[in-house]
Length: 194
Image (tube, rainbow, N blue to C red):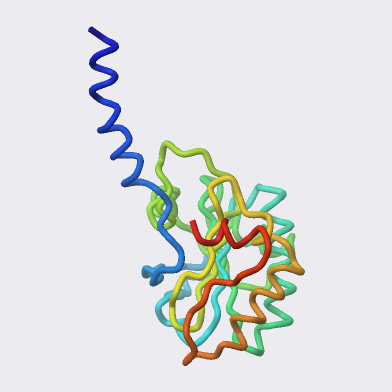
């Protein structure tokens, strides 16, 4: 009896899982508001014309800290050409003081704000039941199209300085009026298309 009930519920469970699956790439970026500890607010939709790299992070995560340092370097190098890096802290300890400490300790040169875990999970299309790693990384082109997003268990290329420099330079060269094409490089291709 119990076995029949479980088998009968399987299609429902699979349908619910699909409803919470990560959103496809490429897609139009949804609105995202980042509020820094100072109260300054930045809207993703107002960044059209720039290539936007968003790092969703935990302030106490060593991987997030190292990635933020790499992204700060890329911001300094590619910012004058149109790169805009933003950080969204979503761990419970990520209050204004925790973010200030994170930014100062790791020499972060881009705005970092806080959001609730539920907000970030919903924004990235991640089920609350899913296992995932941080940082989660998203790249939006000059026209507001999401061109890359981390897999749930991470996408190494999206944290690799050399890969990201090449990928971002390609997007920066596209300019605001060219078509949005997903990069066709190595093992990242499959990761970025899912």
